[in-house]
Image (cartoon, rainbow, N blue to C red; front, side, top):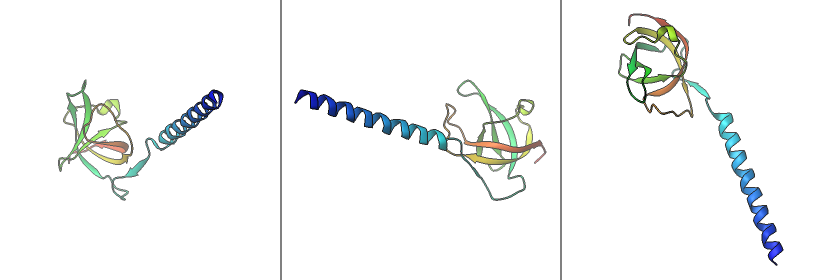
Length: 115
């Protein structure tokens, strides 16, 4: 009787382990999927780059309408507080970070441009 109970516990643990592993792998595969902010081929962002002194400091994008975006791939040469830019962005789904500021985006195209 005791032997069967130990076998059942082992089988249950194996099933639980497999469930968690498959859930983890599925989550990793869907991490970082991108969707366009707008279905346009023209730049969909006009605003400026700002330095945000939170959580160790980072650079974000603030649109002329006040929307905030956290770029995951802002080029080093454009990390200048107050620089006006025009860019083509896509939203990054399922990404989280320490910043908790703005919507995560990937920059497809960016250039300094007075908006």
